[in-house]
Image (cartoon, rainbow, N blue to C red):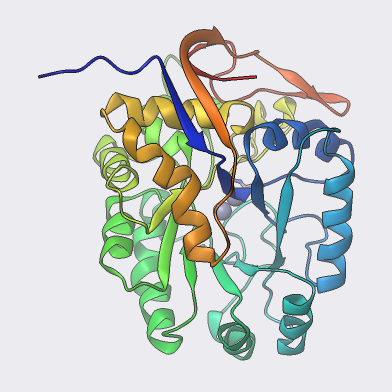
Length: 348
Ligand SMILES: NC(=O)N[C@@H](CC(=O)O)C(=O)O
Ligand SMILES: [Zn+2]
Ligand SMILES: [Zn+2]
């Protein structure tokens, strides 16, 4: 028996556990959208130059707070960018300054990852300090090895890097960011309580056909790249399973439209403008709207050891059209699903 979807759903205020806000004019352009939807966000440190000290993280956080529109309360949580040389002593300073995590980018794996880690063993003293001080390790889980097929880089990362790393640091909390494969979902589901994962809206809604529908579609290009339909289905099953290991992280990654519509287009989807609406659509499609609140509002803070938010947001089942583009400094941004209709709308 099928029951009609509800006309509205109310959730505890959600958080975004994987967000790129950039800096300068770009930061000013994108902070309001996230602050309107989310109570907190874990801010990615892949600026140029990257955020590698507790002091830089504090200064960056202040710039973010200064861009929050009056009347909204938004709490940015900060992470350091792990390099081959991040000193273990910086971890104690970071902990003291309220930084909650460090982010591992394998060198060359994604946008602004050239300062990333060339060999995980170089970071072992720093990872030991993180385990001791209770900082989480956030991972872009793809090998950068050009010999590995782009679509296999996540699965290969699990075998080559993650399994040994987990063995060497059994109590380091690890978030496998922007999960994209069935292999990733089953690794995390069967891992112990120190391992969790974020999942983006695009990986729940689209498979790799979206990259080529009627021509090449640069606004669906992000890393890790969209995968086959069977992987999308595995991700939807994981996100809507009720397991506390999976939670919301948009990986909203703005790039000026002209740099995506380019011979060598940038990787990253700008999803922050309608993130909750997109997630609601994905959960609605499998009749799992009752599982959205756990994924969006509870599992993240529980894993990070932070309090759940108070207050609520309401989504209404009401079609509306997302703008095709929005201002981005001197350029424009084309949001994921821009110019198209959405089924759910976040209440004012
Ligand atoms: N996801 C992306 O495709 N891009 C991100 C980097 C990242 O999260 O890997 C970016 O900063 O643009
Ligand atoms: Zn990444
Ligand atoms: Zn990201």
